[in-house]
Amino acid sequence: MTLSQDRTAETTIDFAAIRGTLVKMATAAALAFTLAAISPAAAQDATYSADDVKQHFKQLKTRSLKPAGKSRALCIGTRDECNPNQAAKDTGGQVAVTQDSGEEALVADPETKAIGEGFNLLVSFEYASARLSSVAKANLREFAKGISDPDLATAAFVIEGHTDGIGSASYNQRLSEDRASAVTEFLVSIGVGRNRLKTIGYGKTRPKVADINDPANRRVESKLIFE
Image 1 (cartoon, helix red, strand yellow):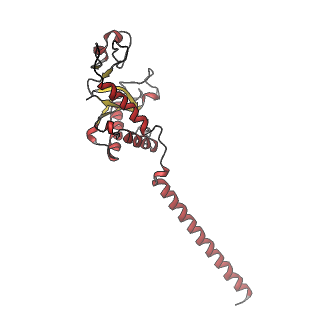
Image 2 (tube, one colour; image 1 turned 90 degrees about the horizontal axis):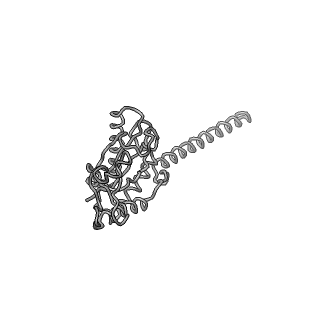
Image 3 (cartoon, rainbow, N blue to C red; image 1 turned 180 degrees about the horizontal axis):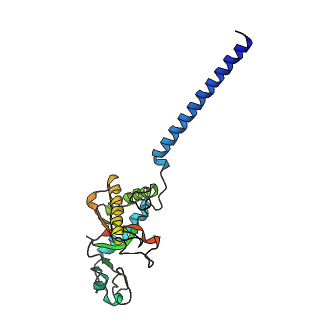
């Protein structure tokens, strides 16, 4: 073999080694990306904790079990039925009944028996869809942990879907129902009993803020069901 042939062979071997190294590096990178996508460690951080959920609902449950005073501790009905004097002053939504002690009593929704202020599940969706984002799933995992507390183990919850005012009433009603259902189905898939969840969509009929088109009105809330 001549000197020229010897150098050509060395060059060929070098290129083969480089190609092999590049293939290995690409394979390792692809594997790392795949593992990151499915690894729990790579999941988005939740924006609230299981303890936040637990404390919110435990204090509601405690209040609902308190004996009534001279006036009603719990009112099941619309705001007008529960507090007609206040209803004359305000519009929209339900208000609490004030007891003689000055403490606000709980108002139960006549349709769902949901009580107290809703816990905003902070679930986000892809635009105009009911597909849960990764952050939404992280939040819902914390919610599921929170309601697994022994003091809440027998409690049931309403999952309410709400939209803003953009679009027709029928479109928003359907979207709110689909999103509430998506939340319920995900919670069931991670171990929450279906019998503990009641799903309902309100469309744009129950805005959280006065401007009906405000994005804050697009939300899914959970409320404790009074037993």
